[in-house]
Image (cartoon, rainbow, N blue to C red; front, side, top):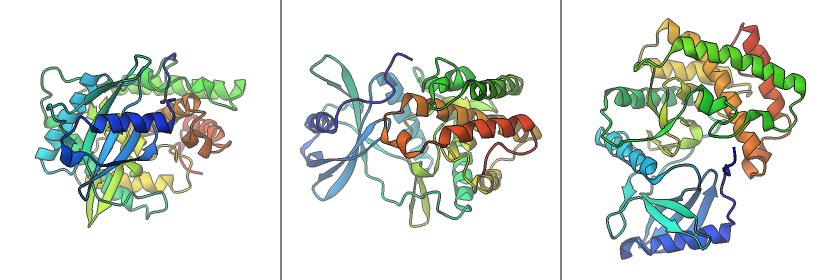
Length: 334
């Protein structure tokens, strides 16, 4: 893809942009601006009058303003049902999605959220933590199935082509470092089977709809026994069970991956019972997501996150593709 897959602005420039954004808000929200983290977007912690807020500064070439406004509409609807999700704050003029201009004429969007307390779980937690993740995912899916999207609602579309095709949203997996010609043939063979499986599974409204699309442990906060869901930046139209595959993103090759999936499914089925057809499609969804993350690694090769995965990560993708083609067990784990 020609569009940059991450923001190349340096930290100082992003911080100045965040500081400028905060001048748009009422005085009680103005205070110290500090960069918290950078991934797809840049997140800043704002400390003002003894309270904290989170400012999300979007990267360019990904979401339109209408997309982000639609995300906030879904968050409002989820909050109305009692699900703990981020709450956006309007600026002094009533805008919740700010559009900021840079000297070169490019633009960035920004959203300020109320701070959510909690601790982020990691892969070192008890696998049973995925049971809770499965339950909260099922509740999101229940809401999605029953919610009527308002007129003008638009979000990114996640299908086989946009996830793992050459023009996918996150780039082309073929550009991942270290893939030999034979490796690429293995992945391409796996993709043919996945494409056929997903086409057969279809996009009936009971199987495909509005999902979080990146609901993994790093997007949860645990606070006083309550699970809170954050980072809906990738939410869009996709297969509901893609959220299971997304739950173990980047860690599909981890020795505990099978236990995580088992616990996730138990939690999910506390709320929603899965059919035989839905269980049968899980291996294809798991492998599709891993290849999608391989595309992400290819397009984000210069980022700290991609570098931290190590030189063997892409090789594990090929190994899991071979396991998928064997068809004897889930394409995850050591």
